[in-house]
Length: 192
Image (cartoon, rainbow, N blue to C red; front, side):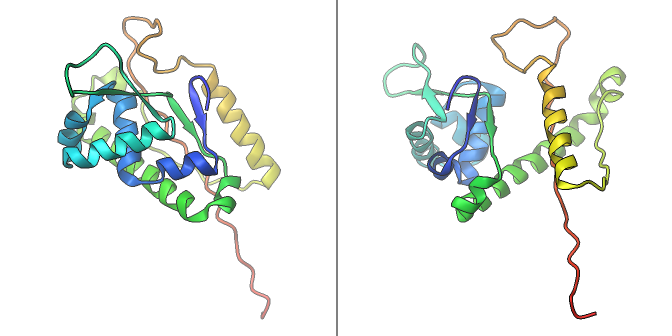
């Protein structure tokens, strides 16, 4: 784990592979620092549950205590990294944790799309015109898929990250790019 992103390994994956932890980390990244009580209210959970999961996230380095905030027993937490990177080979090493994590991430993606759809009618036209919910079916070799993957990451790297501490034009807004590159392999039968 370093800098702006965390690359999951089998150990760190065990620390994040829980649906509530994924949702909590996502909220800390999107909304900024919060207490266990605030997260409990936002997520419809008990403070005990969010407090426990915050401690687990801290143990694995996903969150850190926000010093200089709060008083007494009130502890503020912030995300330790802006992004999480999951690479496929981890799935072979810890398949149950990988499945739990990926399903939790997919659920948060679906929730985010639903929230966007609810807010879409109120968006000014210039923002609606630059948004999309599209899909394309491509027919690629595994080498072409890797090239596409790398090119997509390179393209995203050219744009300003959503970092509240970094300077940005006054009219810049938060944009979320969700990408799923999902191969669906054709299974050929041998009894034909």
